[in-house]
Image (cartoon, rainbow, N blue to C red; front, side):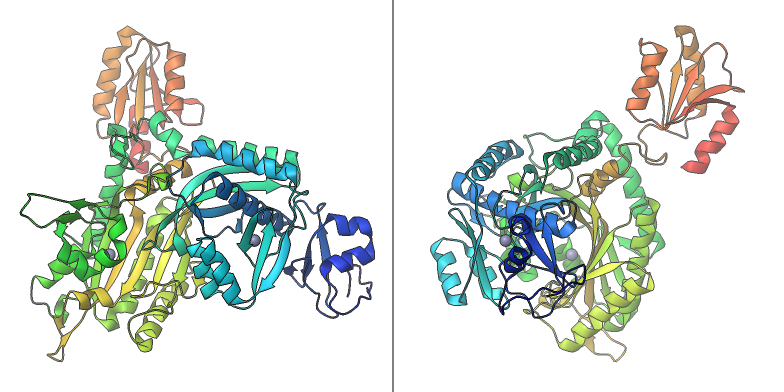
Length: 626
Ligand SMILES: [Zn+2]
Ligand SMILES: [Zn+2]
């Protein structure tokens, strides 16, 4: 072995990282958490490769990302052990380390809420007090399968079935997990642990699969490190849209309609600005606005495949007794397919771009709802574009450009993910080659950074997803562009080609802002509630100093009526009213007293000092920014 200082270490064949640490010194062996070699990390228990350069990471490498990851992943196993003890019947999925912490996905028999986290955290502390060692074993696929079957862990069974290479297990206390590792030797280095939140997550990230409950947490090698992190988190919470929404009077949620926001007048201003933007930009790019029904009979969903793949997330509606049950649409696709099929189509009609911002209902599980970011009542800036095969490239290209322009407007930088052909798929290899190349070329041409997720496409086609991070560092999908050869075929859709033959169109499902609810949530956090002028629910607030100034303030407001103006005639002091406007993050505040006139107004810009401007100057400034 070669050590970081280039000295060499002689070890017997098959020696492990722990052996290497012990050969250097007992203290190092005690503090060792991981071996790193040529940028890769390895469990301490595994044999080292002959002649490789090694670095032993210890509890003193407390800021090293790899050292933190092994600590946090080990903490995730403690979380799973605790949850299994507290919630009999829970099923466990996966629990990797992530930036800033870790998570574990569970299927709970009954939904849990954030209020349950302290109890789980207490159980983990108990485990830490008792102490845990991690034991690694390698077993056959069959044996692993049987063990997880016997434990009623279907997700683990599925993971065993799809795992590549050796199957290894790690056991601590009474808990055994399927895991590649690496793990700590024991739980002593975990000096601080905190569960930080809950969210919904689909099994294998596919919205057609069961929705699981994701518990987030973090762990550190020292208590002060955790405290520092929590302070940063506190800042993030200050930006949390669930707090800012009600505080800024934008929306609220209540149990009368779970997962469906009540939009207040001010929230609707933002909503409508986004709708106007969507409508304007769609029109400019050749999209045609349509409106399709909310309720369809079951047969439609059988044809579309939603009944088979998405039933659990749909709301069924029974009308009169003698009538067939209906279901609320979870997506717009079926309606748009029927619309396309309602007339004879020719190649001259293509690309045909249907846009609809309609209410969709998805029965997301209670425990996975999260403010505006995961709701049951969602509104997408949806579109379905019907194209011939040779139009795919240009169309995708235009969509990426569209997406980039939209996000730029808000100063958002989404992360793109290209998901390619899964093992189980429909369509020919040539179609997939063509489709994937079209998506990838469009991403490249627009210099959009992206990661490729091999095999993560849908069974009907590859897709590009656009992700954003919320104030708490959690990633949410916003836009999506999905190529689909199958749905038009299922609905028997055709168009007459140049060759006078009937062809199936290809459909591209696309949403760019994604869910409008989610987008407003993300924007609220992105701007910390201080929306740019064009989105701000109140753009100007005029504060008359005394009762005698109210009339002049109202006259001023009337002159500014092209903008969203309010006069604050409340009896509070001027100072208090200015503070209120600050708390409400209003972009412009005009204080009007004895010294003010239309030639000389006292204007406070959000976050700035007071300065003097004439009414004309103020109007010009406002117009330039809306
Ligand atoms: Zn593990
Ligand atoms: Zn669709």
